Amino acid sequence: MPITSSGPRIAILGFAIESNRFAPVATRADFVSRAYLKGAALMDDARSEAPAMTPEIPAFVRDMDRSGAWTPVPILFANAESGGPVEHAFFVDTLAVFEAGLRAALPLDAVYICEHGAAITTESDDPDGEVFALVRGIVGPDVPVVATVDLHANVSDRMVDNVNTLISYRRNPHIDMAERGADAARVLRELMAGGKVAVAHIRLPVCAPPTQLLTAPGTGPYADMIASAEALLDDPRIVNISGVAGFVYGDTPKNGLTVIVTTRDDPAFARQTALDLALPAWQGRAAFSPELTSLEEAVALARQAGENARLPAVCLADVADNPGGGGRGNTPYLLQALLAAGAQGVIMGVITDAALCAEAHGLGVGAAFTARFNREETTLYSDAFAAPAKVLKLHQGQGVGRRGQLQGCRFDLGPSVLLEMDGIKVVVVSNRYQCHEPMFFEMFGLDIAQARTVVVKSRGHFRAAFDEFFKPEQIHNVDVPGLTSPVLARFDFQRLPRPTVPMDTMQDWSPQVRVLSHPKL
Image (spheres, helix red, strand yellow):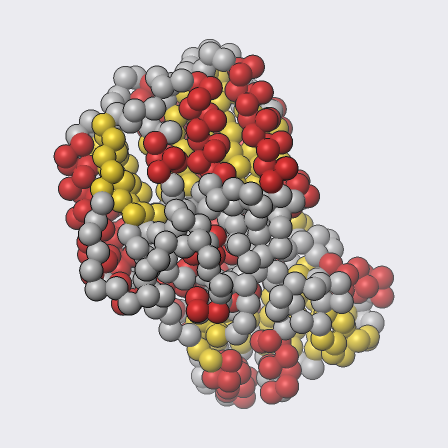
């Protein structure tokens, strides 16, 4: 559909990355390799059959197209795989692109910001807040601004204060990204029609590891909070409720589970609703401590599954090396232990090692060689090791997701290889991705349903796509070292608010609710 030339002029922009304080610095190249879409290229991708960008903007565009005439004003969407602090100079350049694009586009009727919400840079703890404040400063106090953020955003006061409505995902794994983009479109339409809002904002002293923040029924107090929030959404006083879990590895002063209630100009109701949602989560805070499967037990489960076909297959999640949280996707601990134990019927993926992929592509299918992992990686936990391997298949690593978070989205793993290593089949890729899509195995012809053990380097998003193969009781979060370990005592946090659960024992907490009546912008 071509861009329309009538109706309200709405700018679209976003800077989306989840930053792990302990991971290597993210650079311009990390964004360019995933999605750096400027001007018309942004709209072309948003309206394509299989976008490279995350689903929020395409869904926003579809809903705006459906609901009436409008004129999109695409500025820039920059998105990267989760990594370390962003190189500050690149962030400053990005802000300059936002500013120039917005000023050139004035006057505007509204702005949609698509962020992740957990960015940091090498010099800033709150670049998302800087983006929101920049937008507000340019368009002024009367232009509606709506933002969507990830469920793992670290929400600052500055972020809340500079938008009319902040909308976060409500599903973990994140299978509702498109729905939240559509929500943003509907809220903007209401605000442009003259709607007024009141916002209540409360932050809890809870900085939980992501393994404890699933949203399936019965998985803990955070899931209960989301369910309670959704039960209130039919109330005509409610515009939006966002229970934002946060991302502990960001290590910022704004960390903490956050509740944001937006009402139709009813500040008292917003305040009470925020308290009603926050207090039960606080009372259930003991559940924010992780329960993990030891490496020894995980290896024993894999051996048993391989030796006894009558036992259920198992899925071992290397949650401590999740590229979706800043992990490098290359720690060797699980693979080494499974090889040493002689485990059979195992498929594992995806390990990130561009140099190994290049060597395998040069050798060709059928080649037997010594696979040297992490020969060029010096990051903490990216230990080098070598083992005999055979090249089974090669692939360029490009495809479209089949299920879960990546369903219908393009991905590019770069030159990739399927290796056989003493009965274990290992998928190695060039571009860092978490293994949250069955196609990462299936593009090599692997039948996941026939494997006795499946090992994924992913924290939780794989659950939405691999649920056709594994029930929750077949999945085990394995306790190994890594940049995304749920064992928070292993990290040298310097900026987190303290005390905070689960790292500190807390018995009392006095909630402080910020209330903004049609925010003073």
